[in-house]
Image (cartoon, rainbow, N blue to C red; front, side, top):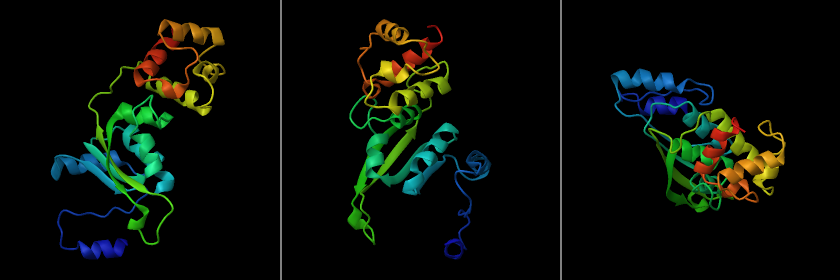
Length: 208
């Protein structure tokens, strides 16, 4: 494919093929170097390998690249989770991360009949518009995402039980008191909380 692409665009002055592992390369360096001379706005458009969709998207978001949008085709089941509104159906831990860094929307569904051979799953094109500023203010991003991850490690458990064995709390009563102070039901599951509620929990944890 490298040879075919280079031959196909041999006479194009604005096309470059980079043959590297996207999870290992310094994308920010590539974008910054080209922004100075060639492009005004950087966008990422890709048909992602489905088995490493999440690591790639999280790398693009967590490295806070100088980009405007990310438009990718991924497995529909994963797309539904990424574009869900936190606290609603299909919510997963990654839903909050996507919502924190971007505004996600569905572009179009791609049926499995569009491919040869036909896969078992349907696909979805989604678009992530990178936020200039997160929708919530958190004092410690690492702690914020750690609490969310813990809440989803055992989805069937209530938030109190999910966090009870964590490094943030000494007892269930401590968690219950915190949730009560934030007007959050002590019987609530992690998947029902809004991103604002997680931000409030994270910002108050160190004060418990």
